[in-house]
Amino acid sequence: MLLAMAQGCDSDETRHTKSPSPGNKQDPSDDVKKVLRREKNRVAAQRSRMRQMQKADSLHLESENLEKVNAALRKEVKRLSEEAKYLTTVLNNHEPQCSGLRLQSSDILHPPHHGVYDQSHMTSPRYQH
Image 1 (cartoon, rainbow, N blue to C red):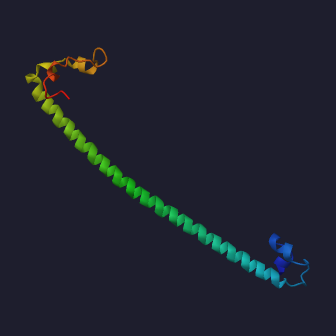
Image 2: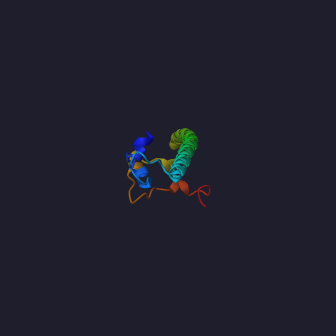
Image 3: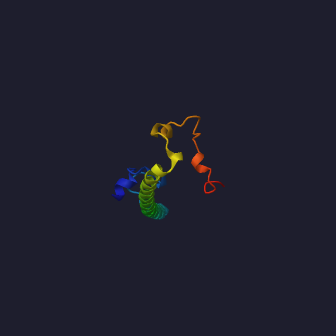
């Protein structure tokens, strides 16, 4: 193996060897450079793995938070749906008693004059600001 490196199989090593002949041993400074390069590579790989773990942890926390927000929003949608159902029931029960609310359903869906309704039932002090 050492002979193969000294003969120029590794391009990085050939830059640092004095001669490609098999009789020459590697320079001690080449061994130091090789060890330093490996150490630097090991540290860089360790930093890369740490960044990947931190990113995964961050994504996991974000996912958990979004799931909590989603659950809260679903709960609010359910509450609002129940409230809308209740208010519809109250309105339907009140409609026969209130002459001002006797509009046809087509008037509610397609209001004449951009939403201007007969608001005579809202003239009582209860509805005024």
